[in-house]
Image (cartoon, rainbow, N blue to C red; front, side, top):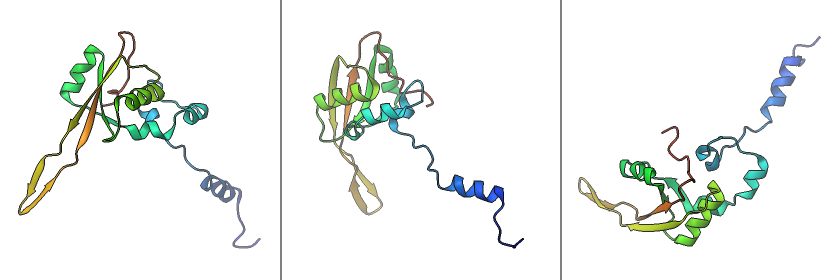
Length: 139
């Protein structure tokens, strides 16, 4: 027997190294079940996740949840139609209305250096009474 001969345990470790870990998408984070099948991942295009940047988790946005309204930060160049399609594609719920608010970035000072925060858009999405989006779970 040689010094450098592989054992059974070493062979198993080498096989495990080559396997990629499962990737989690935005849909995994915000669906109720948390499980995403490969078929579902192919249905959702990459464009929907460029439109919906992130859900806004603020006190006001949480209070709007009681009236079946949800607030998302959306891309600066998106419109109401694109936001409605993205919500339907990602969450499987058709919104009744979409209101968009464009917010200018504030001017900020850090000592002698002056700058400006990014401009962004917020979308307030209204759903039917029975429909819900589980955005605030785990927050």
